[in-house]
Amino acid sequence: MLKGYLSITKPGIIIGNLISVAAGFFLAAQSEAFSAYKLMCTLLSVAMVIASGCVVNNIFDRDIDAKMQRTRDRLLVKGEVDSDRAFVFALVLLLAGTGLIYREINPLSAVVVLLGFVFYVFFYTMWYKRSSVYGTLVGSISGAVPPLVGYVAVTNYINVEALLLFVLFCLWQMPHSYAIAMFRMEDYRSANIPVLPVVSGIEKARKHMMAYVVAFNLVAFALYYFGEAGYEYLVVAGAVCFMWTRVTFRPIQNNDYVAWSKSVFKVSLIVVMGISSVLGLELATMALI
Image 1 (cartoon, rainbow, N blue to C red):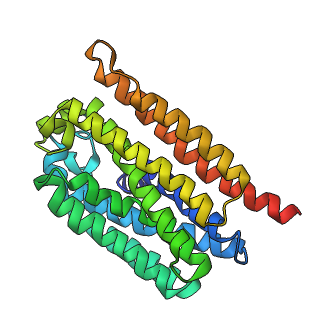
Image 2 (tube, rainbow, N blue to C red):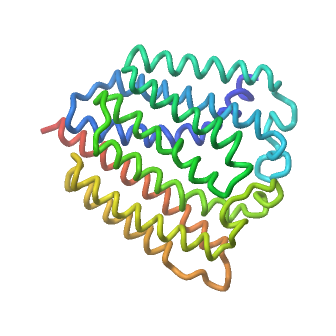
């Protein structure tokens, strides 16, 4: 039973988002005092709020999940977890997460993480995902909240650096998500989810992805110029941006968009891991000096 409830929180999504929380925390901690306790509290709080949002998403999406090969075996779809109990579980997670971050970190962090929850649950899951091609863009806003929470957990304010970090992760979400939609296109068609590759075709989606990658590169370098990131960040950001640009701008061979999109997706993971890791490495290096 416990394993079932854990599975509906989507642990993989939680872990991915916590990496970006740490990135924001590490970036802010290069100019502010670092606290391991604050980091742990922030990660735990955000994990609970994201878990709550994922549970609500699973409850609300049972009808479309049943139509998709990737999701049709989820426990809520099969009725192996009761939806009413799952909702109570989600509510407990939300209250515990926001309460912890409000009490142990600061009220601004609680407000920001709640805004991310609202965008994911109400605007994305319950509205735009099913009705608009802009659902991915709305979802990218909630996806970019975790690094912003990590940042304000340290600073307790939002500045240009924090906004650039937020925009960076918003931009990252778009080609990453469109790539998934491409190699899972039949699932999205079956569930009638209006993502750009399904609605407007592969070529238009590919052009959008290339534009988003270019914009991501510009913001990544702007974060170095206007923020506290050091030369290590510049080197790593330059390397991963080059990798992502190269694979995204590569022509689709023999109309095999699945292979192309999987390559873009895989490199997108390297990008976010590289940038997050180097910020942590920079902070560790500073602590040793």
